[in-house]
Length: 340
Image (tube, rainbow, N blue to C red):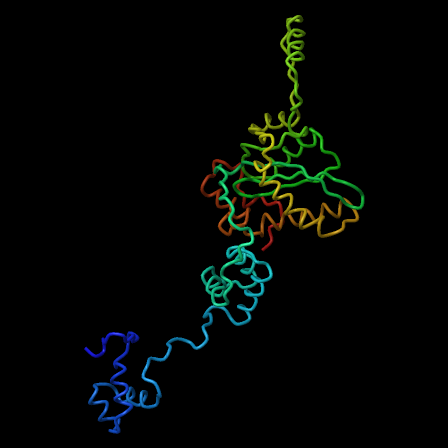
């Protein structure tokens, strides 16, 4: 058939071929006669006689645009992407509070239309990172960082759950064993679920790692053997707190700082949002701002690793799936005021 002549590409609803269209344009007969001759409607005859060419015109809108996003929305999306260079999901979570009707697919199509769907490769070819082993909720990474205000230095104790990403912090003027132990007790009281494991480095606040020579160990063993008494074991304060709370205490391997990388990353996030950006005249001023930031992080920040949930939303979701791991209902145990 002529409609399927080789070399012609017609749209799915075409009723004429290019040969018929040229014939319609060349013949001087009436519209009705041409329509009857070629078995088409009079409208089709008039359409092709009004055109100079015999090829199909492009279908669809002249300027592709979103049916979901307004021009202002698209301008905001494009400006945000170009300014931040954040990945797709991070852009989505950051923009959704301002553009509630924004979806992942509409965001992706918007970035494609403007030619910015792919981020520039600034890191080159890097080896693929190995994933952390999956653990149930209640595995906390704990670390200490140092911050400063106009009144001097403070020690920032930080804990972050490997699974829920829930963060907890305290500021102390000293970083001793007893302070670290008290921090662990406060952490256990602050979260609504049971903590089963904590991971720390080998700092003196968390463990007694002083090397003991074989000679000293032998002398100590002989000392207690002569007295025919059981050897007295002195608990480290942090280990004693773990023992009381029935928490397994794990230590990072020497010269492997990335083992505790999650809490070190959290330290950087906290510092970037506080002491590296603002000047604090007092310790209390830093404490107040730090509490506001941690509350905003736990209850308002959507994380890609949690599939767009906040740490608090993830905890509530875990409560419905694994209630046996919880001490109480997390919906009634919020660190921040329960406001909409």
